[in-house]
Image (cartoon, rainbow, N blue to C red; front, top):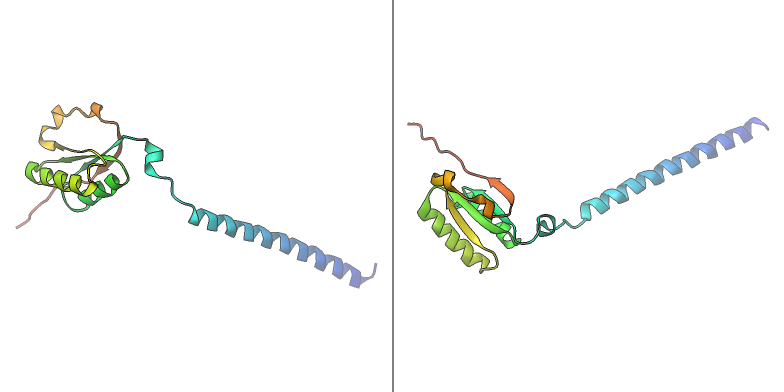
Length: 136
């Protein structure tokens, strides 16, 4: 073989290897696109039917929104809060929004020692309660 044939063999070998690497890269891109476009698994299928979500501080703000969103996904809701009147209003509003499709209960956090949470199949806990400090 003369020098020109060796150059062609080497050129075709590297071209073939480059094509294999490029095809592997395309395969990775395709897998990535499939992953990005995959539909999410519904929460109810993951946690089961008739389960509960416990949301502390769920009577207002982001806690209330968590309760609303989880309720629309089919979770029964327990709101744990210390302000009885505001919590009762939130429960009534949630029941109205969710139109009775799920159960909405509330528990008063001031009597935490006497709570009987074993009666609920709680799958999700959102610990949203906070403490307010006012500095003068």
